[in-house]
Image (cartoon, rainbow, N blue to C red; front, side, top):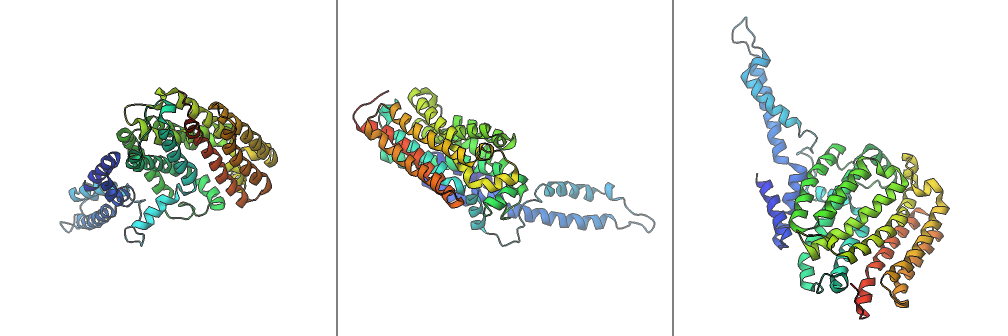
Length: 397
């Protein structure tokens, strides 16, 4: 009961942007993962049950043996055995794993996407908030308010990202693929079992929804859950077109969520602001048509899993040139959306050029990993365009 109250206290404080919330982070990890005390209690109960079973089988008379199923003590302990069996897949409390072990495990699930998801989402929210007049928000959000709401923005992104990555990595075929592409991930590294990952995933659903209700971002959160189910549970990732479409929608949710937490808050939606919706739609199409850039680094694992990705379906070279054409195209479309001059074209064009030169020139795993990071920088360059436009002195709503 104490753990539950601590979780509620943690969410309430964090949604109110109180620093005291971080005092409850270890308790949150404990409630999701460990349950050491409860497991030990159930183990003790099982031992007592075995003792009771032996007592039930002791004859009360020389010619009488009590039937085990009719023994009241056995019926009572059999109930607790069933309860204890629900926790049998959790870690053994006698092992050497510490709080840091579980915290690091939680970090490893989304670690590959911290920059291209969390940092991009936070940057988008902050930069849009600084351009309040150009989007119709009213006055720009002050630095103090941004600092106060930053923990909630980051926690929204991290919890939603953790939910998606756990759902994505827990399947047997995903574990087999990650053993080749990313062996340091928690499941191929055997830091926890698939059953434990499934328990973590189910525990995250109410946490994510409750926090979004308290702090804002409920709409992007629910849409992201739908995309997560489609992508991971309904095999949406098996079709290259649908996979790119879901990537575009998912990335856009990770941009819209922190913005809604920062600027709009609970009880409202970014759908009220048409300029934001149009800008997000343009970015979503850019991501949709270029997100297969991430597939170049995972070709070996995708071949092993027989996954149909764009590079494997149309070929490596055509897929790379497709990215080049679209990057150059959107590097022109984005500044045109804001009716900007030459200065507006320089930023996306320069970052996009560096990315495509690396994409075509370094066709290795290391080079493709760098290309994906440069892709994140190219997308981030779009976020600065409203700020440049606002700095030019022309405000469009």
